[in-house]
Length: 569
Image (cartoon, rainbow, N blue to C red; front, side, top):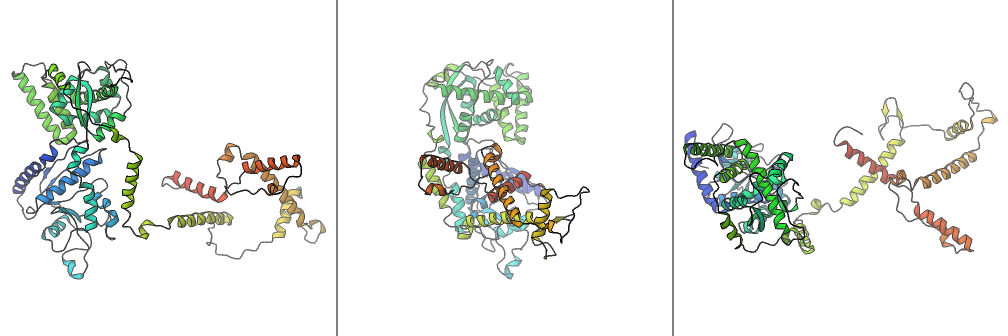
């Protein structure tokens, strides 16, 4: 916070470099043995600009291991607790993920569009700059968007209370309270049969296991070509070594299905061999190192392995490689690890017999039963999730959601039926309630007479109807029409039953209401009659009518989903 008032750029940089060294030195006990999934924790000096004051900035890609992100949160809370004048802002690709963790306890006004420059870590706790509660506070806390300089001044001067509520603090604390003890629990030690130079590299730099696993996990056809030759990490001589993984890295390596090329020098024992898993994991890790080395070997183009140590050419190539590593480290932590592997392997000088003697003194490897969850552990996870909902009210839980959803589906079905039943013209479809003329005159008898005349073929040669309302020939008995309609319904029912077992019939959702077989309630008079009733019951059991409403709503939802937000259908 003392940098907010300093205008001298050089002085700001000097103080920032000093703080950078102090912060990293303070965190070193936590960082020294930590294995990062992708990129490590880092801090860079950012000089002051018009928009931002001078500050330290860090960015880390944690890839598939979410624990790396929460470990960084623990580190930042630790820094803010130790250095009382330090103000920290942290976010990820979901923006304010700390607020997401405490979503059940946030004030109603705090939303993504109102949280910018209002959430910080200060003095070991989460700070949220509130909205003004009175006209007097408007002078200190603007209602709209806060500038970063104004926000930092509010946090530093503490003119108003900015500490987040106890519930919010506790929700975040629950995620990081296991650190630093969690650091050792998340590690997994396993015994692997690896190439000798892999065992040497991991002895010198154990955290190089992460980029090697990542290279194997994200392999492409070009990487597989490198594994065919195994030029830099030949399988022989093979050494049994203890390799330390994070649980995430171990699971990634174990679960990957991979068969080495038949032309490669890898020779695995039978799957029934007692140490088959150690050989298979060693083969995967060796391939990962081969892929990683091949990638950066082709980029660096430096090799001093065959030069005499201490010679002028040797020293020149060594200096060039060192400078290349420093340049690469500025671009990416992953690149730095790759080029560091080049440096270790180019200068490698190890005794295979010593490595084999060390392999005979290995301690017992860790049990990997944590990969499988027991039913009790699943129940405990569910209970913990349920516990997070205890503080929610009825509106948050939406206890009447099911009933409302049923009502909404019914409204969709009835609305669609009403829409289809309406009249459309050249001007387009008329939606329910949109017609200006509500009075519609419809003569039912005239309509049925026209339909009957059409069906009976009472059409003139010039395709015009001869209508004479006074003529007795146009008189129509409505009972004949109803009889024809009943016969048509029976015919349609018979067609439905015949189509029911077909692919088209099975594509519709059926009604699962019980079909009452009235004939089964009457005792059979004779065996033939009884057999007929059984056959009739079987047919009715097999055939179930289509639920029109359910199919209507289902088709609407499927059509809406297929549109993917585009105009449709």
